[in-house]
Length: 201
Length: 286
Image (cartoon, rainbow over all chains, first blue to last red; front, side):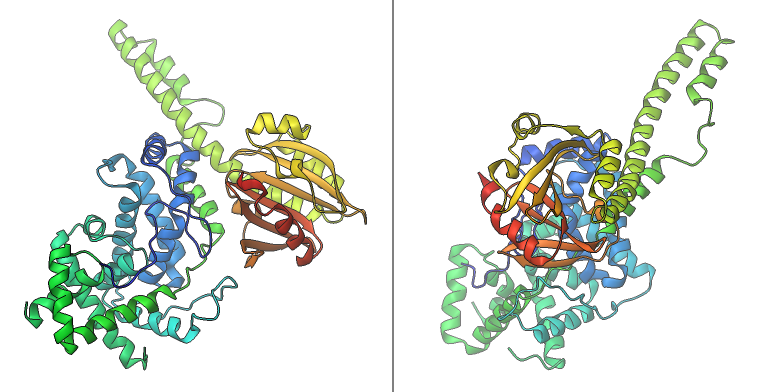
């Protein structure tokens, strides 16, 4: 009974605008993760290739474009260093999101920025044209930047990455029952910021 | 359910996370409550707006730097003497130990040797990637003016073996796209297998009727490292997401066809790139 259709993105998928998503089976993912645990550089590369876009997309909107590359690198460094702790109870895709959110929040705390710098979206030739209004995108990016990091992460995980409530709870390590109420708050605050920025649906 | 209870469940309803029973009750509420219905509409508008966001492009240099840091983190500088492996020092030390001590030292030596092996492999891999970026930068610059020289350098670095398309199919486990025909006016000049740090890839040199040479690389792993920090233009060509870089006055293009990545080097202009993308489109999906 979904009343809207957020773009669903497989947790471990190479998913960019218009690009065919490559989704691994559980067995393939487990095999690559196991190889990473033994430090296999090729397996590391495969995991990076499969999850870089999801991680970078989230990190850009969490910390801003300026710091996104450094934080994304930190996410993968931590992921490869701590992959021995990955139990396999959750999907790797969910686990790397958790590392990405935690590293982003840690970065924001470190630089003492409760609000990220306004996102300077790089021009992208592959940007969909026609229905997608550049003004709308910019306004949303600005409004997102004003949202508290905790609320921003939950909103992004749901609306941009299309995670289920169970997966979001797993990523953020919060009770599944609180996801809906936090999303309510995130959406209401975001709507308020959008209105203040002059957005009209 | 009253408005407060509905408001509490609004996101869960909007995201399809309620049971059908509870969702039915919420739906029924909207019929008689314009306030809650309006709030739901605003959530829907937010979702529609979010769908318009464009994915940021992952910087090409990210993996190269990450690889370097991964290697750097596991291989401390000067951890080993240049001319003497650590295991050698341990073996000398063992000479003065009693038998049990020697066994312990032997075990330690084996463990250290394994550790060094792993670390050395990672270090080698990291260095190989750095070399790959440098070697390919040279190749890209030389190829337009001196394709033969550029070829020889690359083949020498990566154990390039001349091979037929039929043999390449057997060795790679998939048929190179060129085996199914090139765009009109092009012919295959040479085929090589290259042993890259990532994978073995097929390289097909093609010559057109004007005598211009282009190189097609087919590989199973995307290779942004080949292009280092060169500015990339992303575009959609024949409906295919394509990355284009300038290299030595010509164009290099990378796109995905089926499960493989294709890199075209030495294209004169976008028209030539588009000709190859269009020609190969759908050929590699079988």
